[in-house]
Structure formats: structure tokens, C-alpha cells
Length: 481
Picture (tube, one colour):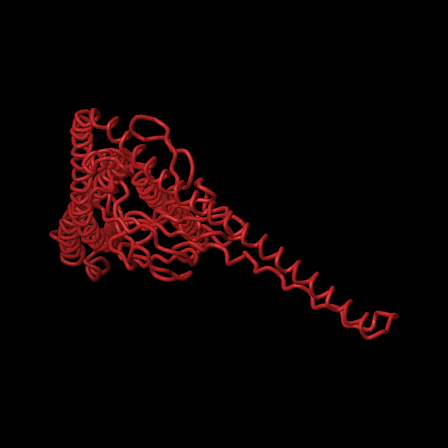
């Protein structure tokens, strides 16, 4: 019965261990998932910050490079400080967990060492008891078989002088034998306890060794977590100090912003005036072409009338009054079509727009201004291609060209009844010269960051009939974001 109860208890204990293991495993899985989620969130936040930096870089286009750098550094820090705060909080949480684990391991180690000391004392006491019991057994044996009164199993029968003495001696012998049996039983119990204590001590010593290794590892982990938390703490403090310094530096540059915005407006107005001149030239050319076409049509109509009159005269002279025998004049040829291919983007579509066409809010002052172009992500040195065939009417170096940097203007003439001019800014170098003809898709230059910009990108403008339009409304101009 006791054996079945022991087995049931053992089964319950095993089930409890398994249950604890499953719970611990589930807890570890939840913790791992939480860490993975946090990591993904931080990575997403970093990616969003990087994209925001790229957008701000485009929005700051035209301002002084030093001002741009200071403002971008401030916004970068504003994005990174919350991440650093989250990383510090995580590091401090990891440190607290490491310290709790170390404390737990050290506590379990102390308990195991205390248990080992107790078992060692029990074993020493058992050994003393076994030695004392063995001495008692030896003395009892001597007393039983060769006792001081001469009592022995043989003399019990031979030397008894009377039945009474025999009875007394028999009783004494029985008592001695029972005492010996009791002492032997106690010796066996003590020896069994000693063996059990020794087995437990061996197991505890193994566990102590394991806990000592675990404690050493926990100390290392806690030290590493402490160092990591300190590093994150110092990093955050440095970021905050740098942010404060940059804010003071930006304050000192604020006086230049208004003049720089005026320069942007002046540069844009100059470009608008030039394109308006091109549009007037194109309008005059369209009018000349219209008048020439009208004259051509009049000449075609006069020629058709002349041919009809000559055919009628020939019919009358032949005396064939029935008429109708001559051939009908050939139809006049159709006028040349003014339609042409559409405009294509300067880089392959789909492309990533970093700053779209339209009104911008200046990020530093909040002022509004018109961004006549579309900014597209492109690495330094990438080729840019002509949107359509035409004539290069402007190749301007960055020096003296305001905010635009190296700039190319292409007059595409009239396409489907509308005049088009495209503009490309901030090029690193040119691949065309002023006045040359260019075909659609020909390389006009290479992506750069000349002018007042902080990073390489495409800046393309499309002017239709003298006014800027959103290039993304054109067929084939497809963005990826």
C-alpha cells in the first residue's frame, strides 16, 4: 500500500514538474514574441525617421546648407531620442530581470549549501551513533555469552542449582537477547538513514555545482546588462545635450531664413520669366505654323478648283456633252499631324517621390511657397533622361544660378497642341550643350546635389503652355510610394 502511495506521489510530482515546465516554456515564448515585436517597432520607427529626414531634406531645398544641416540634425535627434528612451527602458528592464535572476540563483545556492551542511552534520552524527552502537553490541555480546556473572547459553542449563535459578537465568538471557536484537535494529535504521543522507548529499552537491555555474553566468549577464543600460543612459544624455546645443545654433541662424526664402522666390520668378519667353516664342511659332497651314490649304483648294475647271473644259471640247466621263480629282493630302509621343520621367518608373509638386510648408518658419517640381529619389551619379525630343535651351552651371545648381532646360515644342518645357536641377554634371537637339530618352546629365540642397535627388519640372504642372498627372509617371 505504501509503495502504491509512493508511486502516486511520484506521478503527481512528475506531473507538477511537467506543468511548471510547460508554463515556463510558454512564458519564455511570450517574452521572446514581445522582444521581437519591440524590435520590429523600433526598426519601423527608424525607417519612418529616415524617410522623414529625406522628405525634410527636399522641403529645405534652397536654404543655406549649414542651416539645413542644423535643422535636419535637430529633427533627426527628435526622432532618435524616443527610440533611445525606449531602448534605455528596455535595457533597464533587462538589467532588473538579470539582477532578479542572479538573486534567485544565489538564494537557491545558499539553500543548497545550507542543506549540504545539515546533511553533513547528520552523516557525522550517524557515524558517531553507529560507532557507539557497535561498541554497545560488542559489550552486550560479551555480557551475554561471557558476562561477568558467568552467564552463557551452556551455563544456563548446567549450572542452575534449582528450577527457580534456571527460570531467573532464562529470563535474564531472554532480556539480553531482546536488547541485542533492538540494538541491531537501531544500528540498521541508523545505517539506512546514513545511506539516505549520503545519497541526498551527493545529489545536493551536484546541484550546488550546477548552481555555482549558473550563478557565475548570472553575474556575467547582470554585469553586461548593467553596462548596456549605462551605455544607453549615456547615449540618451548625449543626444539631449546635442539637441539643446543644435537648437541654440538654429536660433542664431534664423535671421538668414527670410532672405533665403526671398532668394528662392527670386530664382523661381526668373525661371518662370524665361519659360514664359519660351512660351511666347512657341506661341508665335504656332501662329506662324497656323497661318502657313491656312495658306497651304488655300493653295490646295485653288489647285483643286483649277483641276476641276480644266477637266470640265476638256469634256466640253470633246463634244461629249453627257459629261461624267472624266476621273474625279485626287483628294487633297491631309495636313501633317502635330501629335507626338508623350513625356516620360527622367528615371525609370515606378519611382519614389521624396517631395511632390505643389504648395510646401516651410518646416522651420511654417511659411508657404510653391514647389514647381517633383523630387524623386536617385543616387548620386545616376543618369537622367530627356522626357521627349526637343532642343536644349539652357545649360546653366551652379555658380550664379541661385538655388537650382547645375540646370538643364529642354524646349519640346508643341505636342498635341500644347507647348512643353522640362527643367532638371541639381545635376552633378551635364551630358548636353546649349542649342543642341536631343531625342527622347537621351542622357541629359547625372543626378547630383549642386545648389542649396543636402542630398542627391532628381528635381524635374514640367511646364505646359507657360505654367508648371504636376508631372505625376502625365501618363507613365508612376510613383512606388
